[in-house]
Every structure is written in structure tokens, then in C-alpha cells.
Length: 143
Image 1 (cartoon, rainbow, N blue to C red):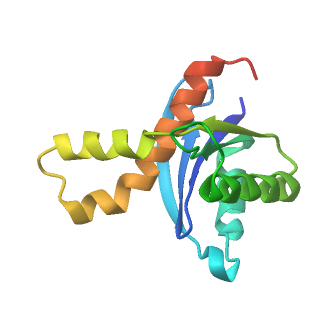
Image 2 (image 1 turned 135 degrees about the vertical axis):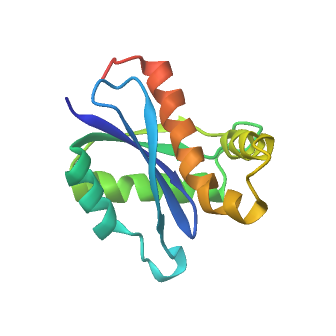
């Protein structure tokens, strides 16, 4: 079975999650450091992960504005999605990610042993997991 890779794309990091081979659950993998301003998008590491996990599809989080419009951050995520679609020749879907970072932060705050510095290190990965899990739940293996 092929896996789906979820991406939480920011200007400095990309949180990575992958589905299990059946497409039921999402697991966090890692956070890739990028630099949007220098056009360093982390594609080398992404390629290694795509190969390692035999990825057949990407799901990119789409950070829409609360009023459902597309702002600069969502445009940047869509541009990233177009780049990986061309580079890897794999389908790219978008998952509305409004509030996923807020949800992830809340989950980590509820774990009393998670300090602010530790939260910063895992928040993007957890957000990627939530984006992918929401997608998997929404599509329930229709791909």
C-alpha cells in the first residue's frame, strides 16, 4: 500500500506526517527547516522521506483566513504544493487547516510536562498529523 504525506508548510519549517499503509492513521515524522526567503524549500530531505515511506499523494495544509478567504500564507502553501506536484509528479490535495495549530498547542499545553520550548519543537509536526488525520477521516480511503 502507498502512503499519504501530510505537510504543515510555514515560512521557516515544514511539519511532516505520513499515513499508515492502509490510510487510517497519521503519524508525525519530523520537521524540516526551510527558508522561504532564500527559496530553500527542503526538497532534498522531502525526496528522501517520499522514497522511504513510498508516498503516493501529498496533503498540504491550507491556512485559510477565518472568513474562508485565501491570504498570503495560504497562497504560499499552494505555491509549495504546486512545486512538489511538479517535482515529484504526485497528486497534491489541500486540507483546510484553520485552527489545527491552535488545537495542537492546546493538546500540548494540556500535557503538563510539555514546556514552551518543547512545544515549539513539536507543534509543526503535530499540526501536520492533525491536517493529515482530518484529511484521512474526510476522504476515508477514497483515493
